[in-house]
Image 1 (cartoon, rainbow over the protein chains, first blue to last red):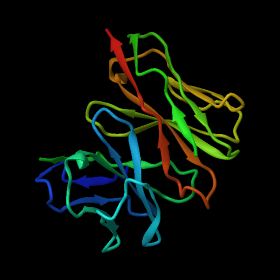
Image 2 (image 1 turned 90 degrees about the horizontal axis):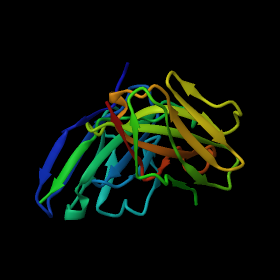
Image 3 (image 1 turned 90 degrees about the vertical axis):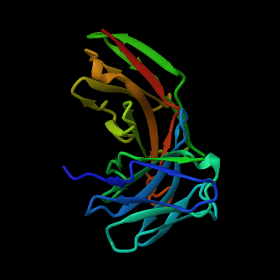
Image 4 (image 1 turned 180 degrees about the vertical axis):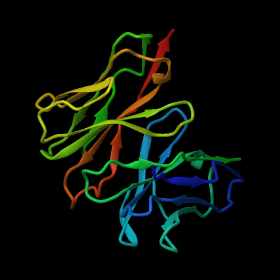
Length: 114
Length: 118
């Protein structure tokens, strides 16, 4: 069964550095998402992406965050200047079409900001 | 705004027994979807079961079933014949059925940590 793949599985970065988290959604999916889970807390929505543009974003997704799908396969989340509080598990997800479709999550990238 | 509440931070069940995890939600929408996701220690998010709000029949997937009470806005998960591999965090999640609304994003509860005793 096709899967959403995320790389790297663990990323360590210093505060103030830029980091790019990568995701390859399932190939025929149309909607793409990033979620964040701070350790011990609930999963929080960051942003949704459809038709090559952001369709919705949460309050968390401020100017430090950006997403893009540069080549039709990769879906990236960039954090420009990381802060300690950005340390979390970041999940990419995609759905095929329609709201009836279930979200397929990747295995996540654990981001540690030191 | 929609909210999802899981009132049980932790639950424990004996292997082979049945356990029910609670979830309530708040919404003014009539069309929506509800999900249970499992997150084992590996932290992968695995879909367990889903329910369309317009369906009265409760969803079932093998040992997993839900009790969907739309009027009460309740969506509990029942795990029968619990197995050691069921030990995980379980998250209840809500998605709007309005295409013009949330674009499919999920709203999660805080989760319930399920332990299974051998």
